[in-house]
Image (cartoon, rainbow, N blue to C red; front, side, top):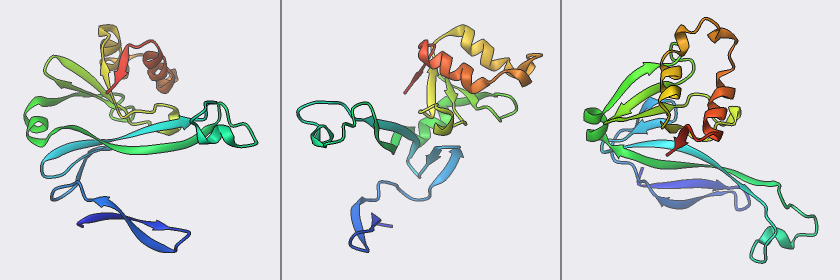
Amino acid sequence: CQSWEVQDPLKRKQERIGDNIFKGEIKEIYPDIFSDDENIYYLDVYEDWAKRSGNNPFSLMKKPLNGQLISRNTRIRYLDKKTAWENDWEKVADINFGRDGSIWKKGNKYYYFDIYGFNQNINRTIYEIVDKEVLDYLLNFSNLKDSYTINLPDKIRDFISKKKINSL
């Protein structure tokens, strides 16, 4: 595929939106993380919210949209070269036997790879773990006696809000 196209519902035809950025075969590495022959990519979700301002087209509408969700978007982001992934990244552990994400290491940094996705209000795919206690908690989560009663997505959102894990 040399280019990307989308279906334009108004014109009822496909429209070219850009060149294909991928080289060779695309393979999934982990949910929302994939590679081509040269690079590693991941999916990232973000939201646009309406704000009142002079240069915001939504502020000109009769019905105020201030504070309302305008769009939810998914983008493809570059993570690393494939050779660096193969040589420098190491999967340290699955959390709760892979049902709740995983921990990866590159150099002396640790990363949480999310498996919940946007429907759990965890907007990013990869987070750097910057708090040692959080790293220990996630590494030992499967061994906790009460792990089956803990809502891990709530804990992850709490770690994010307290900046104990940071999105890339």
